[in-house]
Length: 276
Length: 289
Image (cartoon, rainbow over all chains, first blue to last red; front, side, top):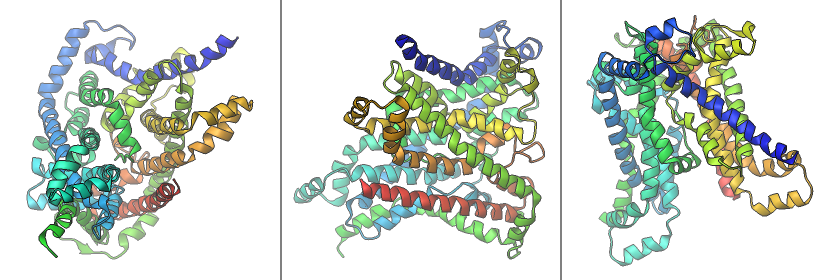
């Protein structure tokens, strides 16, 4: 009886895990079939030629649907965007953490406030601005928006991390004759690398997953991966299995990041993650 | 003031210009556009509060408000309960990490990927949801889950629970770890049953964490866009549209920037009220500890 009681939570956990994995499994299953096969055979019918179908789907997504371009666009956006944002934020957050710069607290709360803005509040004028300044559908334009949106969160993380660094270190740096910039570069920047890592990983994932901004501010060339993925739905020759395969591949970088950096990501969430 | 004393101020200014030009200035312009008639092509014409009075007499906005409320009510409470239940269930068990990772994983996926996966799940013929219903003899429930007004909102919230339970799971797990072992031990020694322990010891100690989950869930549920846009596009006949999607529809499909902006200002006002409450609460929390 006791062992029965012990088994119940495990049975529940296994059922929950199965339910949670089901959408993944069904998508993987679809990616192993051709679209024609999906239409003419029952769903649970095993894939006729999984490897060939999967390759066909990948090729379809990557050539006809131009996912290659959108994939590399988003790699560039996510990588450069998250690093630049983290760098700018790590500089800006320093005076906010030391309590000696007047107005720093105010700037911190202003940035914190901005993280709560729904995109809808700035997207319409932003489109207008971008069309008139020629930034619409450009890499620079998209990069600017991504950096701006990701900065406040990293500032928040960095400032909280800096406050754990004791004032003694700052005093010692002054006695050693380090300038403010020297103190940032030689002491605070190297010490705060774990926090920067949290910021970069978090914002990399965020930019990779971003959809709405890309939908409004790009067409064709500068399109990010999520918009490309969505557009397969409206393609002339829409194929379920192509979209399933493309969705899986678009999810791979994020899933990998989640599995590798789970500890960092959890820490980022606990530091007050704001999604969307 | 000497040069060296200026440096911290320069540091402080570094992240500001881009934030101002990309986020703050356009947000302010939205307020202005909401007071005009504007299609993005011809110059805006002053319209006073017309767009706002239109909002309050537009039957579509009643639909949007109701859907937003459903999203907030269920999108806040259900992922919270499911995530917390799984955290408590898995706590201290073998393979705890594995179970948690599985539930946490969807939290990292984009709204588009999730939307696509769940369009497949809900597919009327080939979707696993209907297949499972048929196989357990619930054929009468089988339907086009995303095609029927009203029901589609609940179907999409199902996908939302799948994504967001991971958030509640992570926060609750951190909360459980923050509870000192001797307190739980004392409760066991006092002979409290599992439920009593949870009700009288664990849950009260989790309250600050619960507050974070609830307030973040409210903010996120108010802003849900990607999932709805991908799964139903707000349709059929704008039946599953929320305020966040309505802004998009009015601004970019109808090209009525003024009305779209007015809706965005109203959405912003709602988010603002919730945010202020959140910041106030979490600030208090920091002080208390």
